[in-house]
Image (cartoon, rainbow, N blue to C red):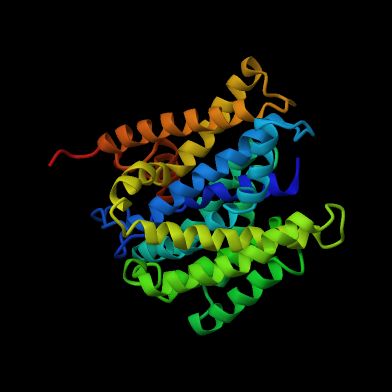
Length: 352
């Protein structure tokens, strides 16, 4: 399994920490207003993650032939691989902080989070059987080793530490699994500084971030195209292009949500984001089930892989929309939440 694909699959579990609440809530507290921009961004990134995970699960080959499959495989390699896992890792750290805030009503909030991460790790160990290199287990490990200790850091220390850790993750270790801690810490710092709750009031700042990310992404992508694939800096260039692309995608998406098409776009992808853990696990089951009949295993039929991704996403979007109209959480999200609070949580929505 390639490093970039494994990295992409690891990213999908940012949703496994509860959505950002607008005020602290305990297990018996009232449902808070959601910061829906992050759910929508998570759902958008889930689409990119699936595009990379299908070839990884089925062990597809890139091949050297011309035609549509060759164009799709190259396009995914340049524009999708390593571009979405940074978004999910960032959102995982952000949601971790906001969940910790909501858990303050309990006697031992960090103990609850440790239990949550342990359950996540067990899910990951089971999921690893179907998808080696999956996301849940490493997220749980880094959550315990990095996020929990960092939650005691004061904000004035956390911010510079997060920036340095993120830079080191994409320079010293060239991206990959060990870039996750820095991205976790950046998300944690974003929540601590209040940016997470006020993102809808920062269009100017988002525009500046987008322009800078695009300007830096252009030479990074160009370097990917012209640099020898077996050169000593190949992984560093790919990691830099990936994280810059992730910043550009995320900031552009958040800005698009403020336009006329933002409402229908959010209605499409927000349910995917709210049930990202459920959708991540069920996507693996669906791909494993149909890969053989479709002849995808170890093939170069990237057109069929792309079509399968679109069908899976359409089915999951429709199911997520229906499910959340009747229930508060996705099935996997409810199970994780119940294990966290160590008591059955209300699932069915109460009619108004």
